[in-house]
Image (cartoon, rainbow, N blue to C red; front, side, top):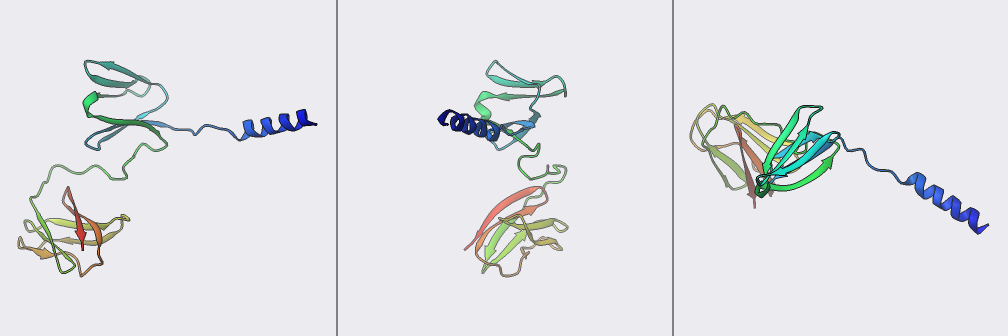
Length: 159
C-alpha cells in the first residue's frame, strides 16, 4: 500500500511539473535598453570584452560591452518595456514645472505634450499654441506623472 501511494504521489508531482515556454532571450543594458532575440537557436560568445549573441536561423545579432550589460533573462514577449520607439527626428527643448497642482510646459509653439499617470493612462494631451509656460493639465491629485514633450519624457511629482 505504501509503495502504491508513493508511486502515485511521484506520478502526480511529475505530471504537474513543467517548464515555462519562453520565446525570447533579452539582453538589458545599464541604460535600460532591451534587446530581445529569438531564444531558440541563439548562441552567446564573449570576445574582446563584449557579449556577442547570434541567432543564425533568424539573422538576429547583438554585440554589447560587458561593462554595459545589466542582466540577461528569458521572456514570453519580444517587447519588454511596453514603450514604443520614439521618433528622434524632432527634438524640443522644454521646461516642465509644477505650481498649485498643475503641470506647466514651456516649449516652442506647435509642440505636442502628453501627460501620463503611473498606471499608463493619458490624463492630458495638447499642442502648445505659444512658447510661454502653458498649463497643460487642470488641477490634479498628488502623484507621479510622466510628461512627454515630443520624444522626451520627464517624470514629475505633484506634492
